[in-house]
Amino acid sequence: MSCLSGGSVHQDMLHSEPVDIKGVIEESADLFLRESGIAFTLRSNLENGLVRGDRLQLFQLFSNLFINAREARPKALVVNVTLSRRTLADGNPFGLAPGKYAEVAVADNGCGIAKEHIGHIFDPYFTMKKTGSGLGLSICRRIALGHGGAITVSSEPSSGTVFTVVLPAWNVE
Image 1: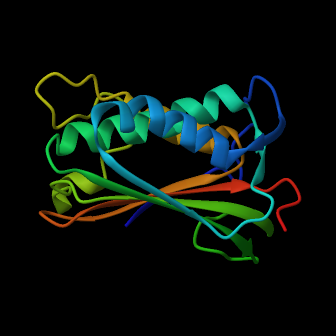
Image 2: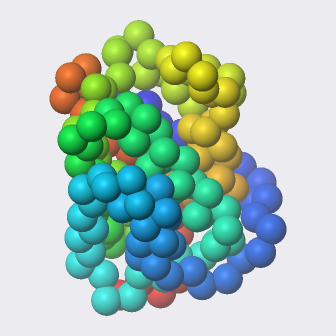
């Protein structure tokens, strides 16, 4: 697993407000997955899925994750997203401040990521694609960090990939 967090990163958000993260994910999935005929499910156990952030940046973060999933397995792709509440304590694995967070797990059944690449996928210009720029996941990292959150990845070749994004909650109950 690779983890990058924003516990000590300067907040560079354009505009911070309460954002309905479920709505952002649905909108992004409509544009980048459902329009392409890709199977998509979203499960949420949150009554209030508000996070603190910039809606446009969060839309870009999830759009980049969905585009990557789509490009990893263009046929028979399934993307499952789970949205849940997470309370982090001191010394949490993300290196984030204690408090309430929204956790978004984006899982796909794509080709997975080789172990030798997993530590580099958030590096700018690192790509395994013939036509990729290598910026999509580094932008995801920058956005997560800029929101005081974190992004992690776990993957096994031929078994798919799970990206987990943790963002500060706005009174998530």
